[in-house]
Length: 118
Image (spheres, rainbow, N blue to C red):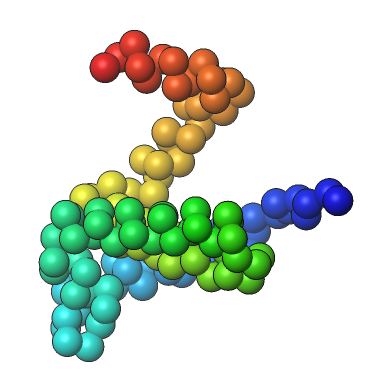
């Protein structure tokens, strides 16, 4: 049975832009009223731990859950990634540049190039 294609990212792009704006707006928010503000105020390490936790939940959902669960866990991961990027001061354009640099490069070749830099 063929799996469904990833399809267009138009809706996801629009929602990530809105979510990124919301994260930016909550930087100075009240941590008692905003989970985003609480995460940002807790610092980079806490944000990193949440990303790891959510990433594990996505992996487990892919291995053993249905598509809706995978989508929901992925939404959580994307949110926490945005918060972590904001906590670290990494703009989305920098991430886009990193992706653009890899465009047309084999994943195997890209990984090998990173290992030679280490």
